[in-house]
Length: 250
Image 1 (cartoon, one colour):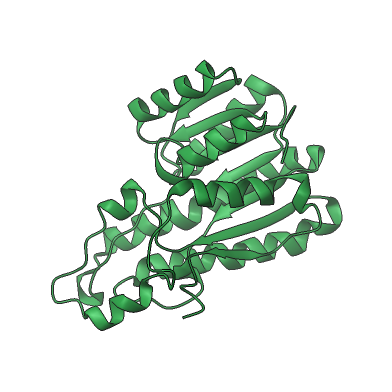
Image 2 (cartoon, helix red, strand yellow):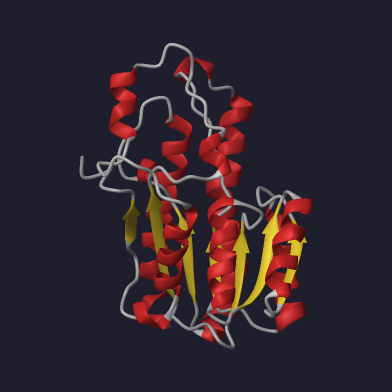
C-alpha cells in the first residue's frame, strides 16, 4: 500500500480515525493536506507528520460549509498541484431520544456528516478525474443497521453509504473509485465522550456492541482506509466495508 507521489486530503485529521489515517498514509509515502475544525490539535498532527519527514500542509475548516470545502480543495491544488485521494472522515455523533432531537442538532448532524461529503466530493472530482484517484468516505455500522437513540446519526451515515454507491456508479468508467468504511465501536475521542440519553434501554444498546467483545483503536480503521485508497484495491469500488468486530452480523 504505497502512496509515493500521491497527495491525500484528510478531513477530521486532528484526532481519532482522521489522525490515524493521516499518519498511516504519510507512512506509506503520501503528501498530506489535513483539515479539521480544531486548529491547535490539527497543527500538532501536522507537526508530527512533518517531523517524520513527510510533506504536509493543513487548513482549519468547518466542513459543514460548502465554501470551506471548496477552499480546502483549492488549498490542496495550490500547495501540491494534484489530488489523488480524498478521505472524508470528519464527523460528529450524539445520542438522543427522538423527542429530544432539536432542529439545530438535526441540521448540524446533516451538515457535518452528510453535506460535507457531497461538498468535498463535488469540489474534488475534477482533480480526481485527472489523477484517476479515489474517495474513501467514513460511514458507520449505523449506516447499515438501525441503532436506538441514533436517528440523526443513522440517517446521515446511511446517506453516506448510498452517496458512495451513487458516485461509484457514476464515475467507475472514468477511472475514479469511491468506497466507504463502516466502523463499529472504535476507541476515539468521539466514542469516549459519547453519552447515552437518560432512561436508555440497555437491551437495545447491547445490539450496538461488537461480537468480539472489545473495541479496537483507530489504527484498525486507518489500515482499511489505506487499503481502499491504494492500488491494491484497484478493482474495488462502491463497497461499504464493515470494520466492526462483527456488529452488523449480530
